[in-house]
Length: 175
Image (tube, rainbow, N blue to C red):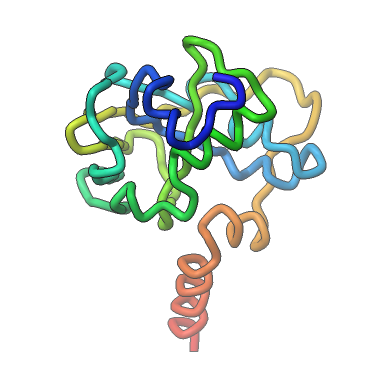
């Protein structure tokens, strides 16, 4: 797709699949704001279980489950920027080729995950992707930026409100 208008996106798209757009926000303070370390690590963007076509994804619902509990849920039609708008805007600047994958966003309420947690991303009538969080060993050498943990990192990673509420609860519990 190159310079395809919003109304023609649907005729030029192979289909849709759930994806788990994982981010390791421990690296948010590194790389001068770049997201390569946060989102670009191996295993951080599983997609599947397959590509489905012939379904108007705008009529579907996206849910994310963490250990069986719904933590994100939204009607795809309510996205701030619709998929047709996003793809039309993107293909003004980038030629999308067969096999390219474009992630179009996630609803609020991302949550921290721990090794052993099961994350499921579901789009009704499209499919459900299931992943188990696994920890990998740290590299044997301290080259490059190392992970950090700070209030600022958590504020951004956890979308502000959740972290602020948790800190307020901790402070109230220490009175």
